[in-house]
Length: 174
Image (tube, rainbow, N blue to C red; front, side, top):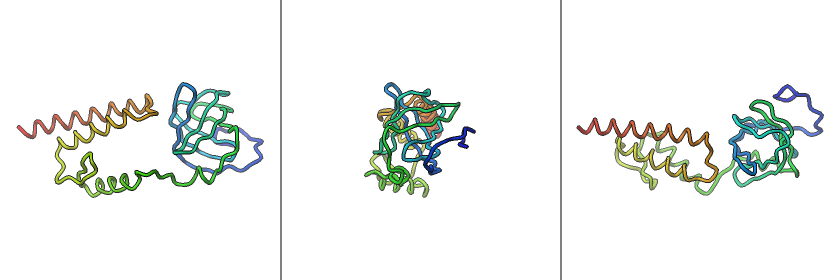
């Protein structure tokens, strides 16, 4: 029995995973989590999913697998791949050329050190500099390919926070 309560006649084992990915259709892109994976298919979890029989492409980093939605029920969908995939490659930790920079920026934030847009550690963060950085992050995210409506709503929240910080900075400077 799978997570949807369905019994399955599949012949191969699936790896239970929790991986972020995108599910692409010819007209849309959906952020999904891969819940389990085999060389011939996957169980996906997402707030919005294409319907059964829709042609799709599952994307994780540089990896892509074309297939078709076998079934869709609420926030779960089963995908059958057109060709076998290398499960090991899909579950391996994905890193990109900028990963080291991202890791160092996250470490700086955890140490409560301000970081400028250029990636340099700033002296002391101010409300105004934090607001500016949030604005710049929002601009970069909004211009990325694969931007979804769901992410756009989160960017609006980010912008509201940046505006609030700017207002607090102005009050503090008076």
